[in-house]
Image 1 (cartoon, rainbow, N blue to C red):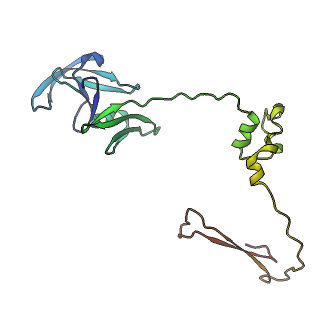
Image 2 (image 1 turned 30 degrees about the horizontal axis):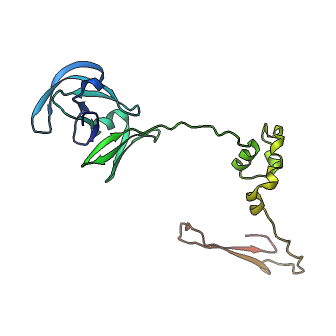
Image 3 (image 1 turned 180 degrees about the vertical axis):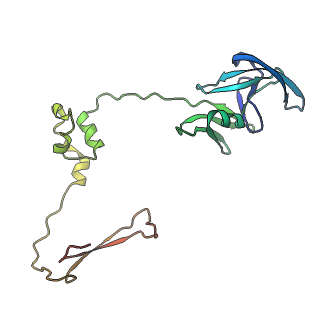
Length: 222
């Protein structure tokens, strides 16, 4: 219990009964702290604590008679400029500026216990063809366009990649041309071309899932 930190919405200050976890300890004017059994204890020391994962909390009171460690939500919000959200199972702490997770809590026996957010290191994947990489990043352009990227034209091993790209083959295939028509419009609205599109998964602002395109053959106005 002493090694775990409880996230407490009712505590006015961070506090712990374990002096060994505290750093930069200094004496303060004695203040009375209410204990869970209804009694009161005096705190005369204050310091900082680095929690698991690197999160540092300051102005932590040392209460000798306290048999647990508490993280004050109100003090955390004031000092770290963060937001804290609770669910029926978890507690999430998020930095307001960077929107990064700085800590979390897991509910156990009705209490939320602090858990560190492990920072994963990014690893570089070896063996990725530079031409293939930029071809996908740019949205599968032709090899003529891909070669305009500085440094790509030096990688001759990937020059034939575009020819075997399955996405390019499926997305850029074309159908046969329409036969020439002898029906030529001589005035507006004599011939119009209509195309109904949809349904789309996201409705428009007016709630429509389809839209109709009408093109005038003579003026080419949509």
